[in-house]
Image (cartoon, rainbow, N blue to C red):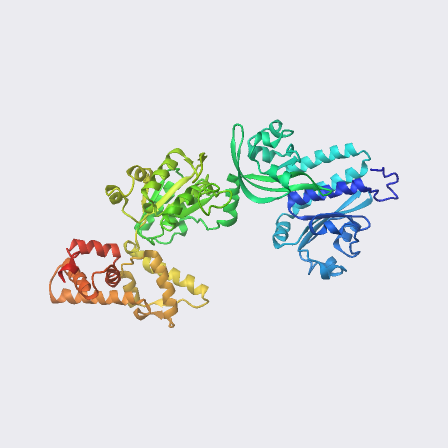
Length: 610
């Protein structure tokens, strides 16, 4: 590079070597920040560019554009809405502009303008990142601008490269993500502290060494050899002493059409899991006060949940389907020391048995047909340091129960198809509506797993045991859904209230919630009457009338009346399971309760007698 002898009269002496330097800066910034980068001199001639601007080097920028504004006023300029930006309004190139955003930073030495460097985005994601992280990107451009300006003052190429390396290393260190770069032979030329932490190495262990000697399976070496790139690849690196699992995105480094190396962004899978949780798992955890109800039974359950929240002990939530066990699990997490860490829920009954193991423990690349390339972390890994909620735990197979017990005892898991263990630290909250004690007696549930999970049992009461809560809850759901439908909430008549209070609610709070929605579609008046309720409520009312009639006609016990009603129902509807479901609804009891009473009254062989 020739020396700029008269800086006061010649704003920028740039020869081919300096243009190449600017192009390297643009390539490096584009690779790290994932934006297109362009550099223009003080005459607004493009001297470097990446992506869509790589073929536009040498062209003039419009004299009225934001690049000119930043160069003229020597102040940064950010555009995130070209349709409303005052400078863009007068730009000659606005009609054909495809940019969604850009951030310009002026280059200068003292009072002399050198030009401008800019980050340019063409997607909505890049626009969002500019809006959310403007200060960080501006700081990054500021450092890069200083780097360019220092290089412009130097006429010694070796000194310039030395300064460039040091400053670029400092900038790389300021990035929270791990960055590692190799040359075309695979020698590591750069590795920031974040990468060293992820790889569990010291600087002297890797910089200057060949990546193949440290991690023989490192895919970045193939990038330097072939020029292909990859994004968000889960990588398992087996080193001399450590095995590291990480997520990596890598691209080749190219100069004058030749591959001169590769750069990779890396992040530990633990960090990836936490980021994924924050970005995608926005299901809310809420305080215990958000669980509605003030009956003694629900108050006691909430008190138990609060007392156990601060403890690391396992909790087993018991109760019928629809009682809100997951709400309790989320509240326990909310009040625990892990509240700012992941809460991950898996319904063991909703996932097919053959897939549940990989759902919980994850799987390795090629573990089975259809397995995703690079493998996939399981719920245990996703919930590391947080809370894992195992709903319907009674539906796990005995084989899976054995693996689950080992994971809970050792704190280690092994992915499907994997050969090494992964340490996890999760707090387990499980739930079931099944009789685990009976299942243990019948050999359907492991006794050791039962005692491991049942450290602190909490009974979530069914709605029929919370009669004081029925009407307040119903009114709450009425107002909630009527507000969503933009209509007034009707009030309950005394007759409808009586029916709601005496109904057995086999579906519990979930059924109550659905009933409130149903009523808003059937009641066009201001008052809810029995005819607005679902048919099963009216049948329940009819059954109640029948019971009173029986009671008046013959002084029989409640049990004999109940037996008679069940027997008549079986005669009328039949003995098949579907008929029993209908009969349970008509009698206002759950299916399990009906089956228990059929057995109690000796009616289980009813079909054989009729």
